[in-house]
Image (cartoon, rainbow, N blue to C red; front, side, top):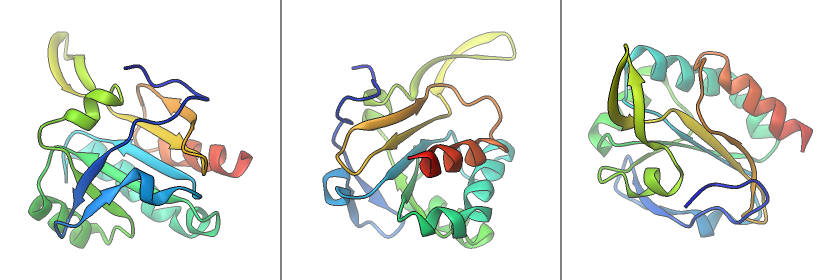
Length: 155
């Protein structure tokens, strides 16, 4: 299933750092940023997470929910959140089913070698549950949160 702007975002329910279930359907009425990243506490993923953290005041003013999704478990997420004081929710997708639905799991090129892995990508979902913007492959993790904030503010 391809993610298409203007179409309904695929439904999902995943566990947060404390084992609570978070369902996309429960967030209707709000903008939701779902960003997919490979691994907690690695250089690019840390820069991206800290970028969202550093822009949190501006993001929060818009009433937008930010969800970071990786295959890591709740304990790993908890350490990552605590270490960098991340103010948003991290979700675990160990079997990568949600990542597959969102095009965030697949073939990628690592140092000239093709491998299967998490494709760093982000989806901005509107209050109506439809995809407003899809960044299919994020090239610069450290500057990406600024682009997401610009898209949120642009409406």
